[in-house]
Length: 172
Image: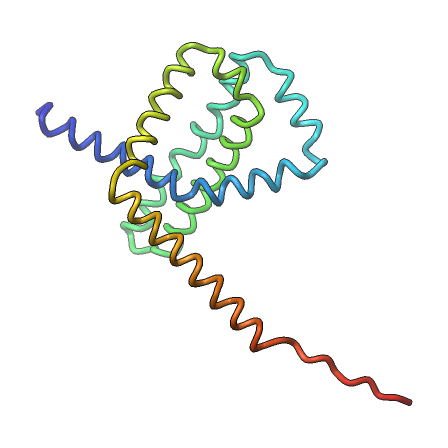
């Protein structure tokens, strides 16, 4: 039984990391946008004033609250509600990653002062490094960059050929 479960759990862990890796660039942009707004200054100051263990508790809240969104999304997909399943999954995953990314960027030093968290974060970085070193990952990354460059080039060409025309002013 262990022979079957160990590869299955490893595969599920890799898929989990890959899903997060796909959504992380978008989440970082949203997180940076939030950080740039002064409206959140008081909340930011309160979070920074917390000690390490309350910070860890706060850090765990988005994961605990939003992680069950994935099974809900799978249920929706399984019952034929494909659009709603995709929306719930994408929205929940982005919200979770934005909150976790923002909290981690604010409280990184405090969280890493907790030995168990530092150990787990080190293991996470090792797993991430292993996945990103895979040839399949490198190939997908090259394809992604090529697709992005092609889309940007097409948009620039379209904008160049479809410039808005100014209306001539009537001289009265």
